[in-house]
Length: 158
Length: 91
Image (cartoon, rainbow over all chains, first blue to last red; front, side, top):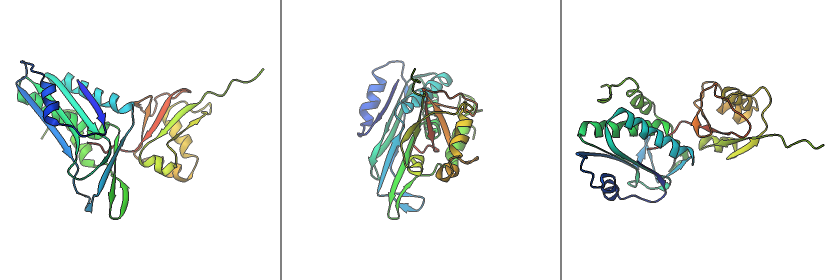
């Protein structure tokens, strides 16, 4: 398992190749990349600054990946999250999951992202033409994470 | 005989709460009747001003004790690192 918080960019191809590591049990690799949008809540975003709570962040991400491993039969998982100042179109986060079959990899990858959005201590601050503002949490993210509370291991409820 | 220094608890304020409180954290000596996360929140809210506003009942603030999310009844003790977290917005 790899969990990393870093200021620099990541090369998803390289990271996923490392995650696979030539493991012949792997028949599926699912990946998600989150990037910075230029519009949020109807305002133009010039820059996005991400901060986190060092010490807790790594612990929280590791717990989320452990939870995914307990729910699905996956081979390995990777989470890289950037912090610091980012611009529109920059990469923010990479989640990668390997498994024997695609269903487990897709489900575990989506689960990790949904839990990351609601449980990992990261905060976004946007610079817009109207000034600097902390981004508000979205109820839709809570809803996305809640789907997994009662879901079977095959995936979220519709 | 000199008294030993009072044992302190470390408070950490993150993101929006750091801006609201004007500090990244502080060390505090807990009153004897503050022994849980919920009691700590009420004690801080009683400072008034931004504290009363941000920590009012119903405001979405989570508390982490030693890097784990706490429940209202989670114990807080001298030596702990207790963080006040606004709703997270990563990813």
